[in-house]
Amino acid sequence: EQCHHPATCQALARQDAGLSLPVIDTVERLQGAERDVVIVSLTTSDPDALESPFLNNPNRFNVAITRARQKLIVVGSRAFFTQVPHTEAGLQAQHGFKVYYALCRTQGALFHWPCVGQSKGC
Image (tube, rainbow, N blue to C red; front, side, top):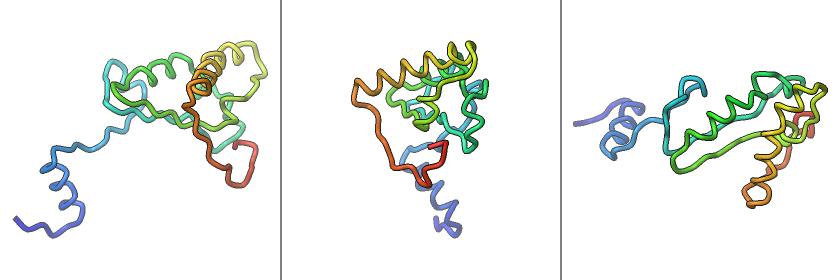
């Protein structure tokens, strides 16, 4: 069977190799499900959003990091993990993130890339 469209060719090649497409979804929709590899993004392009309740939700973070069967990759800015919240609720919410960051640091599991532009959110 001849393939004429690149996307169709790639899909057929993946199917023939027994590979599936990645699932990209929200933490809420993946609750109760597991995946072999999970990539979690704790980033924002808006430095003022670093303290947002959505990004700093410890329950959402717990669900996200417990969905991986084999490999978990967490992408986050240093600014997010080292911020000092301005409220007591913010401090409490950030505690789990700081413990996780410290654990990754002691396990040698942190990888740093240079910050482009050296803005406040780096």
